[in-house]
Amino acid sequence: MHEMSLCEGVRSVIEEAAVKNGFTGVKTVRLEIGKFAGVEKPALEFAFDVVMRGSVAEGAALVMIDLPGRAMCYDCLKEVSIENRLDCCPDCGGGKLMPVGGDEMRIKDLEVL
Image: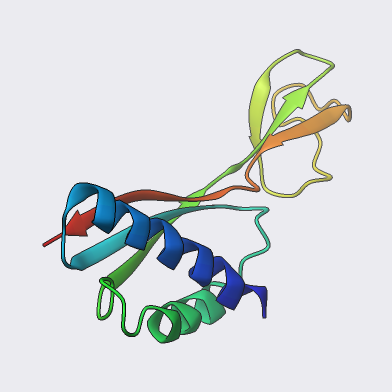
């Protein structure tokens, strides 16, 4: 379950931010998760609760924000939203798409105490 290691990375970032910015607790963690990030949300939620125990984010609410998949269409030269990596361009129907977004996961913000 790679969601556990993802949460360990989030915990490290939060703890570094706490030291740098002087906060002692986190009420809410908002994560942006791309459509193609390969993250199982129920597993991430479970792992988050486990990994945050004993940290400044223990008991924090996890809010997951979905980001769409994005691709550059080389037929119409537009950046478009796509549901699946192998979709055709929703604007022109072209099949020459290069994914350019939707595989990211990042901390959007923290609500701290």
